[in-house]
Image (tube, rainbow, N blue to C red; front, side):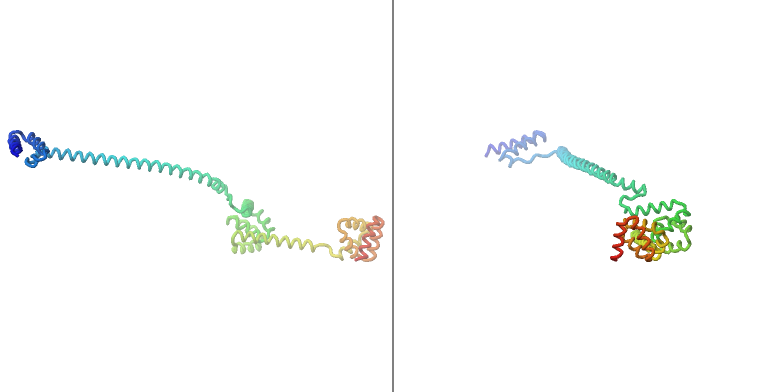
Length: 287
């Protein structure tokens, strides 16, 4: 125990003799000895060195913080660069899609510029073309032509015209017809309804025309008078030729004339073609 105490005392004396730095170094060394460190005081810290050490520690901490921030900044820069690349790819895809869309819309735009619609109904397009054709004509020429159409057909064409062209053509029409057409135009409905009405009016007109043509033929009295006034030889030749086309008409004609006329015609027919005359006579007798 005495050597230890002696050592401590000796160290104390030495500490008082040497300067603070050496003393602190020795205290630090003694502080590392297991038993001795309990007897020696703690080293006296130099305020300047303490400040310097604190400053160094702060600088070290600041450098560590800076390095950490630099690392985070580099990571953010990498993420930003990646985002830029992804955005560039998205922009490229969007540009490609837009080019395809523009390419698909270009034919439709060209058709619209030409005044045509690729999806338009062919019938409606034809009506518009006709309306334009009549609009381009002088009203004095277009009006008489259109007056030969049905009322619904005129309404359909005039409805497809511009107002100025419509007024000019109506001014050149028959006043009563122009008034009737104007009233129809006032009540004009959709283009599809106008088309149906126009087609129906055309069908009705054609049907009426056909009926008129079918009823405008000669009646039996007129046929009888016609063949009675003809020479028997001429009538016989005509009937023989007609028989080749329509035997029923020949029988109808012979039945419509009086007995004297029929006798003379049959006599002339037998002279020209006895075989056919015999067939006709046989049919006349069987009716």
